[in-house]
Amino acid sequence: MGAVKTPAKTKPSLSTLINVRVTADTAASWRADAAAAGMGLSDLVRARMTRNGKPATLTGRPTPRRGRGRGSVPTADPALIAQLAWIGNNVNQIARHVNSTRELDMSVLTVMAAVEVELGDIRVAVTQGHQKAT
Image (cartoon, rainbow, N blue to C red; front, side, top):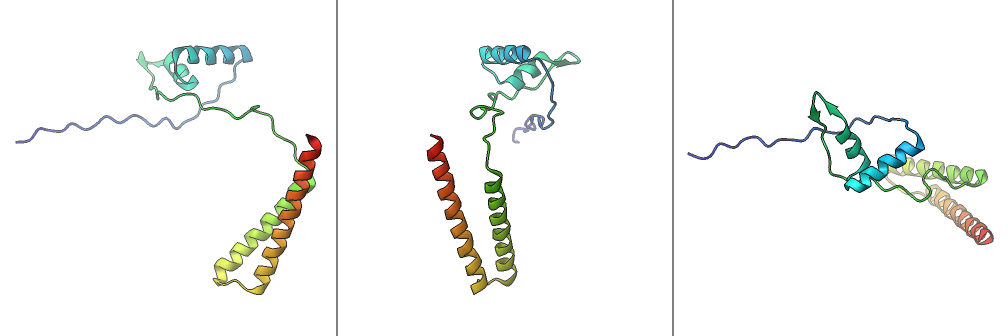
């Protein structure tokens, strides 16, 4: 007779997000406490919360890293955005055409060449604008 296997315990899925607004000082304090405890901010908040005397589930994962200057979004020229949207629209139309006909004809190649030229012009304009800004 073999040994009876017991089912492995599975961790509950932590998939529901709850947003909480706090002061900047409180947020900084919680982040410092989490760092001092060697845990992520979410685990710290879960550890401080209890339900019916039972401790909350901890993941052991660190707080995700944020990009530089979180909250700061670089500005973009509206005309550039409009051009890129136009190009994206053309590329989508090309993809639909090729997927439906399963062939590349001369009209598709002509539009693709025009898109390539437009992207080259945009790249040059952006590069020149970046060089002027620095």
